Image 1 (spheres, helix red, strand yellow):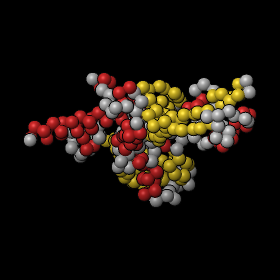
Image 2 (image 1 turned 180 degrees about the vertical axis):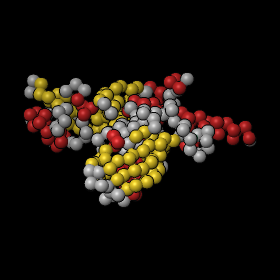
Image 3 (image 1 turned 135 degrees about the horizontal axis):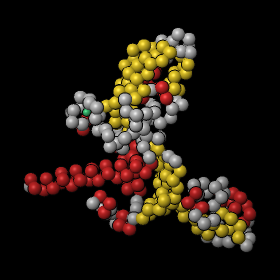
Length: 280
Ligand SMILES: [Zn+2]
């Protein structure tokens, strides 16, 4: 059912998506036939609503390091943790009614002493699937005889409550539209002016390298170099959308989760509307 529904804005009917790049934690795709409000809604849903796991509480039992307890707790909170959305509930939506249970919380511990640098990999997690994404992230340096012992509690949270829960860096730009308005008298200079190699020289004329125009970041260097013979605009119906995950979730899953949340919100809105109409 979920796949069939599409945004019903007048431009949204013929929406088309083309994958441009999938590279580890980053995906970029082209969305055609929509509008800025729609793509920005998806962007905001990702950064504010898609939940991830992060350390929320830390109980320090022993800390003789040079860093205060608060700084260590803060550093632990910022560690990206591999997240499994199927196995954990948001605490406020959990059957335990927010009291904290195995379905919405996870205990993690560190017990170590100097001389050593304590890395994220030294966190012992009760759930082997949930662990720091980057094991080499340093937490604190311990000198000889210094100790660190703590118990931390991780839980799911949303970026709107704290940015540590945000799953990704998300951004979009209007698809660049490059137009040749008149004859270019200095093709060499124009080709050389572009910092992202959008153009090439073909029979002593400026031509666009196939698909490279999507790399254009609207710097207008070619407009200046061609003295206005080239004009650049950005589309307000086609967008290049990028998601760079911090590592907790796969970028594709982040987008899917955002769409799911969007549908939930629209369903809630439509139900509220029907209820209001019936009450009349
Ligand atoms: Zn619970």
